[in-house]
Length: 333
Length: 181
Image 1 (tube, rainbow over the protein chains, first blue to last red):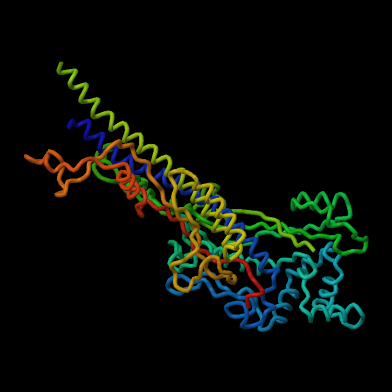
Image 2 (image 1 turned 60 degrees about the vertical axis):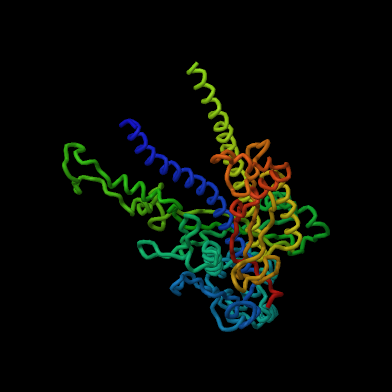
């Protein structure tokens, strides 16, 4: 065996593992990133559906972990709460109902004139937020409110941003930890995350960033084309026999934008390999007999974890990159 | 003459090596493609479970038909959708459950490596030694393996449980059923 052969073997023993790691990481990123994108989209969509299913109406002790549509909290293996399962506040379904429809979020939503085309929603607002119950409208509003009538009962997809965000975070935490507390870990800053195939998903910092409502009048050509462009549903059959005073002519569509902070830590020891190379110097390089810690680049976990803001250098949450997404939600009557 | 003998011996050694390497590369390629396809399929199964909390019968039939299409190659055998969990208390994935309850789904398939053709193979001696090993061993020669015996041997290798690809997820169901109170 010649010296050249020995050096070849030495070089190959370093290059081959690193190349193998890169191939595995490349495959992992390309296959799992798509999966994560689809799952986050599902988590957001199912949160919107859950909110509009009004699970709190079943009352305490029924249909959920501790009643009123709440869930058990997601905890790590030491029992520390990662994501709370308490979506709603209130002791009774009517309490929860009032908290939602007296909230600032709902009042802002209903303040847009376009949302008052549904008379019954207007009456509910009149009773709950304007304490108006002396005339016929007030009495009707009171009846509707006491019956826990909501926009979704009338086919209008109102989403309370805070509550849907809580549901979204819970869905994410459960999805990406696979329901296993040992998959919930802490990073160097003590922030908890779900570990999923080499990704860190910071579910507690995920949020619904924007809800954009649009109302389409299906009896107009522009309304029908707008609705079809937004939902890919042809409304031609829906308007058969629909009169001008029919409330169903108006269909609301909500565009949901969300953001999930996450970073990639890998599934192979490649980070350790880079760290080793980065921290290793050959004695005698540049005329130095020993390592000069003042002038030498030292491997930084902060750089490896994208703590300066990742590739863009501009993220809301330090150390991670946001995964943005959008979806369309609507209810047809 | 010496060069000619060397060439013959080199060729004798090279031919089986080239065959083995070719089959190795082919198997590597087919395994990679198979794994990708099964992983994509398992992801679809998992997505179905997340959206419904279980695999409804209509979806199960559709998914099974799709899996049969994927498995209609010689390198995949005994493919099925995993619906059972090894976690205590988690029912079969075809059983409807409430929002938040875990469901375990995935896909399992036997990967069958393609082996080089072996036209004939010696049967083992009763004392497990090879023909010609030691003096006077020729009497122990028991003949060649039959076609069915060869087939059985290949089947035993191809059916090895270590060659099974299992891609299984445990996920929460994210659909609320008001009728399951």
